[in-house]
Image 1: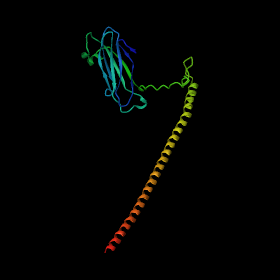
Image 2: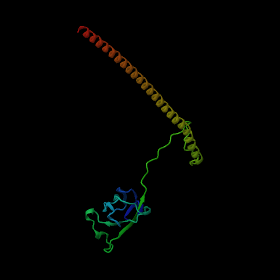
Image 3: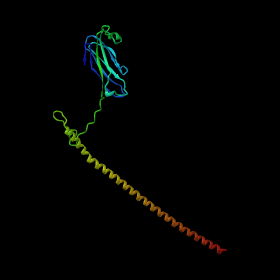
Image 4: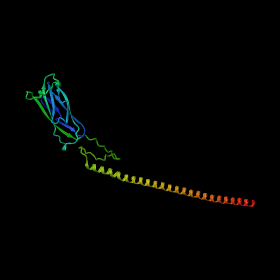
Length: 241
C-alpha cells in the first residue's frame, strides 16, 4: 500500500488473471485519511484497452473509494506474458462540499499552482486460478499412498514414490486376470451359442428331408392307383362294347 499525504492506494500493481477472449477486472482501494476532500483522476497509456470506473471522483474525509479497472477481451497473449501498460493516479486537495461533477482538468494542473500527488501503477498478468486437483483415497490398510509428513512439516519423498509404486503394483496384477477371465467367458458363451445354432439347423434339415421322402412316396402310390382304376374302367368299357 502506498501512503501519500492525500490518498493511500492498495494495491500498487494491477494484477489481471489473463485469459484469452475474456474480459477481466481488478480493483483499487483509495483511502483518504485526512480531514479534507480529495479529488482523484486515473489515466492510462492504453485507454482503448481498459475501462476505469470511476476514472475521476471525490474521496470524502476519513473514507475510502473503490475503483474498478476492466481489461477488454484479448485475442492473443503478449510475449512472455509481459505487459507494458501503465496507469497514473493523480490526487489533489479539493474544496469542502465539492462533488464529482465539479471535477475539471484545471484542478490537476501544476502550472496553475495546484499541488498534485501522482502515483504510477504497473500492470501484471498472472495465471488464472486452477481448479483443485482430486485427492486420492487412502489404501486398505489406512495409510495414505502419497507419503508421510515428518514432525517438521516436510513431506517424505521416498514414502511418496514407494507408496505410489505399491499402489500401482497392487492394482495391475488384479486387473489383468479379471480382464482375461471376462474375455474367456465371453468367447466360451459365443462358442456354445454357435454349437446350439448348428445343431438346431441340422435337426430342421433332417425334418425337411423326411417330409420330402413321405411326399414323394405318397405321390407314387396315388399314381399307381389311378393307373389301375383307368385300366379297370377301360376293360369294363371294352367288354360292354
